[in-house]
Length: 119
Ligand code: SF4
Ligand code: SF4
Image (cartoon, rainbow, N blue to C red; front, side, top):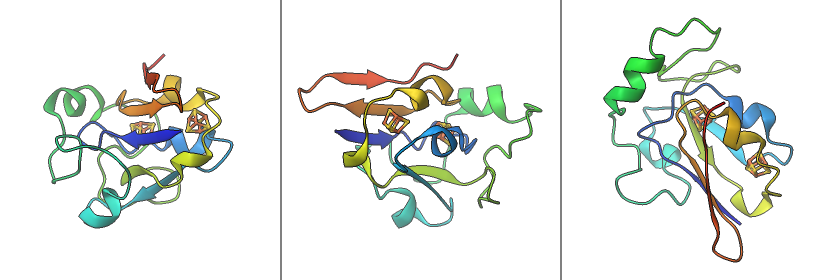
């Protein structure tokens, strides 16, 4: 299984880390590009310091108890999600419906791709 996060759209809500039963995700600082890009996200989906403006507009002022687009993670939200252990994914799909930025992408061992849709 391959899992990556499109960093351009990640809000830092931490839902993915909180729901994943096998610890695929870790939250990293937005000031640490190397750490933030330590998964298999392709060019164009890596963290270069800028968030997709449409995603920012949708979530920046959302009052849901999460820090959106904060540089650092405080244990509950903030920073960026990185799929540090994609090979452990059991395709439960929990993260795929919880991802605010609709930015988690999973490819199974047969090459079938699963993309997150927020519900
Ligand atoms: S689909 Fe995979 S990465 Fe997502 S929550 Fe389930 S085990 Fe974790
Ligand atoms: S659920 Fe999506 S938007 Fe939220 S931290 Fe994880 S990857 Fe980023």
